[in-house]
Length: 257
Ligand SMILES: O=C1C[C@@](O)(C(=O)O)C[C@@H](O)[C@@H]1O
Image 1: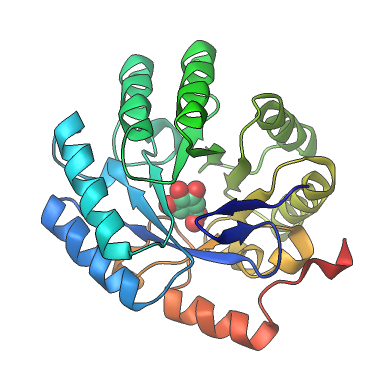
Image 2: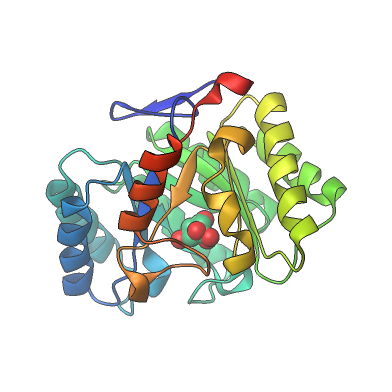
């Protein structure tokens, strides 16, 4: 695995980095959450565009990303449109998804989340465009229903590696303790096999341990909500909680690899 450095922040080396999602439904609310996020000094901020109830025009994306980038003063920004099909707020056609990712490639964000299971041509073109514009691509796969088999998890990581993404992220829903442990083991294995850093989580209360065990699993980023009301996925700690936990357990040191 080769660590990835963005705006001076190195992912895949040292402690797991904390990303705070911004889930505002209006531009004003996004700006307000951006201010609160900055006060908490996270390593990264994730702008969840699927929460926005405005039209995702080029002008809107430019304006909001520029505002966030100024407000966050150097904190790297991830842009994510989590599609309904993968547990997000809004449905989108493959064509519109591809268009949106192109707009994001021209915006002020630093990393772009791309769901790798959309139409293959759309995914490939979007990855190329984003990387050509200097953005880091997070290949992502979310399963809100279950934890797929070990083989299926392996195949998802392999697909992301083939697509040459910059980070490979998998989030699953565990139904049993064994599912959580399988996800963590798949993460640890992928972390030793893939060239890119991995990001993994088992969602929900059952999966919470997976959000604080990056030193074992290699997960390079853990997502934590601004407050208990604005979680972007089940099982997230708040940023204050996660910061405290990482102070106690030493965050994440990759010496074991
Ligand atoms: O990919 C992820 C991970 C996540 O789903 C979580 O479970 O923390 C939260 C999302 O906002 C983010 O895009």
